[in-house]
Image (cartoon, rainbow, N blue to C red; front, side):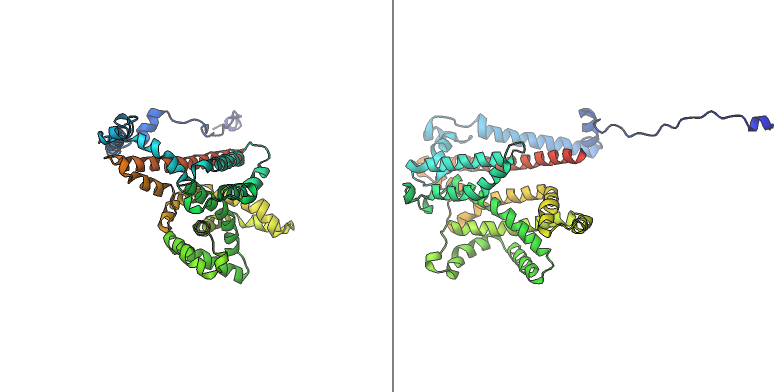
Length: 379
């Protein structure tokens, strides 16, 4: 090899860095179906079986609820039809299912209370709404007092007093759920912070409360609140029969909420605590401005799951004599005037649809919040 060949210049070749495929490129529906539903022969067989089962179940549901259902004609038409739902029964009993035995002439108070509550909830949950802090103050402080006075009645407002034994139906279910949701989250946050506290007494009290409440069934807590709570207070301070299960629900759900919040607190890197302390930020401001917003964001799915479970657990208050929505359905279905082959099935179907609607709404809202927060982090 000559010296000239050794010194021959080599052409500079630009190295093209490897790039990842665009993140927004997704496989088409056919590719997705092949990869996820028919990737193997066994997967294809299972997919076909489950599709057939789902189709059969959907057909049975639609046949009973819509195609063969009775939509008019009254009780006689329902008795003559053993294959479909009796929707005239729901229409006839709808007011009872919503209000219970609340006096008819005073039901406008329930409507007004629910309308104001729904407006405040929409205002509070709509992320682009103005003055959401005002909505929070109104919903968490002003609204509970105003709603109780309006529903219960007061002589100085010229409103007849309606005893809580007459309250029932969907009114009770929504009341129990809202009270549990409103009080369980702040109490759960306090319990979670107390469990992580370095003060031995505070930590011991919080740990004991959380473990004891979470270690017993909800029914036990209801019975204790209903029958044992009056034994520890004077007669003139005995809580109302409706207030007792409300307290039980708030305390029971707060114990579970405390563990959810604690999981979010443990997910925050320790460096953030140290950085806040290095900057001289107080413990209260550190938790309020830095730690808790991130911790609660992380556990949004678990928080909503706890709320959904709480909403469904309100049906257990019927055990202590509270006529909630499901209890109202059970009472209405045994009306001898509406005796029929599908009355019970129709009542339970309607109850299931109502509970599903509320739970599905909460689930969809949490998913929307997760997507919105995920976009915020990407930016």
